[in-house]
Length: 301
Image 1 (tube, helix red, strand yellow):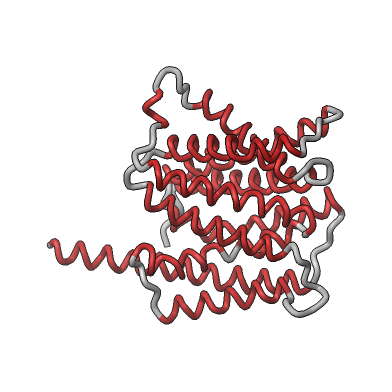
Image 2 (spheres, one colour; image 1 turned 180 degrees about the horizontal axis):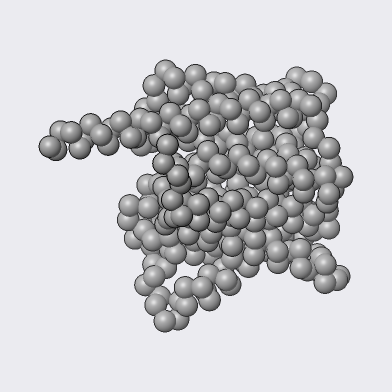
C-alpha cells in the first residue's frame, strides 16, 4: 500500500483545521444565543463574513470576481443557507453541541437521496440501505415519541435539510460560478435580509467578551469555508469527506469544557450508527466513481 503523499497530508490537515473552526463557530453561536436574539446572532455571522470578503477578494480592484453568472440560483442558494443558519441558531441554543452535530451528519444521506431527482444521480440498493441505516441513527439520537426528544431537535432537522439543499445547489453552481461569488452573494443576502429582524430585537453588547463572541461567529465561519476551499484545491472532496466525522470529537470536548454538557448514551450510540453508515456511503460513492473512471479510460483506449 503506497504511503500517503505530502499533498494529501496537507489537505487532510487543512480540512481538519476547518472542522475545528466550524466547531468553534458553533460553540460561539451557542454562547451568543444566551445573551442575544437568534436573528442578531445570525446577522453577525453574515455581516462579519461580508466585511472579510470585501478585503479578501479586494472587490474594489476586481469587482467582476464576485459577479454571479446564475443570479437567481445563487439567490435561492443564499436564502436557503440563511434560513438554515437561523434554524441552527435556535437548535444550538437548547441542544447539546454533540446532539446538533450528530443530526447534521445526516447531510450526506439527504444529499444522496435528493441527487436522483435533482441531479439525475440515482442511488443503488446498497446506498439506499446505507441511507436507511443512517436515518435510523438520527432517530436514535432524537428519541421521537419519548420525553428525551426536545422540540428544538426539529429545528436541527430543518437546518440539516436546508444545508443539504445548499450543498446540492453549490454543486450545480460550481460548474459556472466562482467560489468567491458564491461566498459573497450568500454573505450579502444574509446581511441584508436579516438586518430588519435583527434590528427589531437588537441587544447592544455590554462588554468585550459579548461583542467578541458575536464577531467570532462570523470569523470562524468565514475562515472555515476558506480552509475547506484550500483543502479541496489539494485533494478531492470525496477523498476528504469520510474525515468529516472527526467533528464529533471537537463538539463533545467543546460542549463539555465550555458548557459542561456530557453526551447522553443514546446520542453516542446514534452518532456511531450515523458515522458508520456515512463512511460506508462515502466509500461506496468513491468506489463507484473510480470504477466509472476506469471504464471510461478503457473505452478511450
